[in-house]
Structures are given as structure tokens and as C-alpha cells.
Length: 87
Image 1 (cartoon, rainbow, N blue to C red):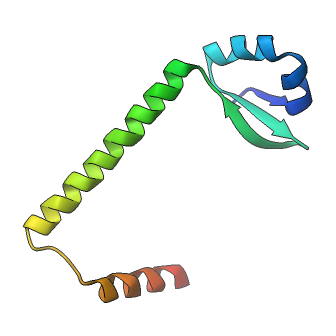
Image 2: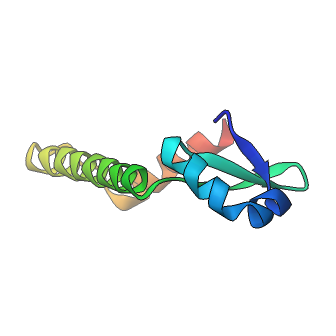
Image 3: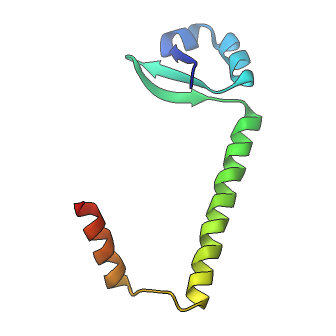
């Protein structure tokens, strides 16, 4: 993200910040660290749709695995997660 505005400047120039956000996401920083992003409503709605579609794909894949009998029990799944965390 190329635009990053300090929180104090965002507060002072909120109207201008809203206009910038219509052209692309704007990061807002506090103490030099990005802490938030302001984006247009259209961009936010696109992002939400993308996340929902991604979730739907994952659920479909899980259901297909279940129907194909490609499943593991809970204990085996948690053990795989534990091994993955140790790497």
C-alpha cells in the first residue's frame, strides 16, 4: 500500500482522506506503525465478496473430501497440527 497517513493528519484532514480512499486504500499509522486501513465502500464490498467466495470454495472442497471418504479423526488432525507448529 503506497499511501500511509499519520493518525493525527487523518483526523485533521478527514475530508481529504475520504477522497483519497475513493482512489485506493489508505493506511493510517500511529507512532509510525500502520494500524488501520480506510477504503471505499465499493472496495470493501468487493473484499467481503472475495472472502465469502473463498470460504464457499473451502467448504465445497471439504464436503467433496467427506463424500470421497478422505477424512481423518479429530485426534489425528490435532496431532498433525501440533507437528506443524513444532516446525
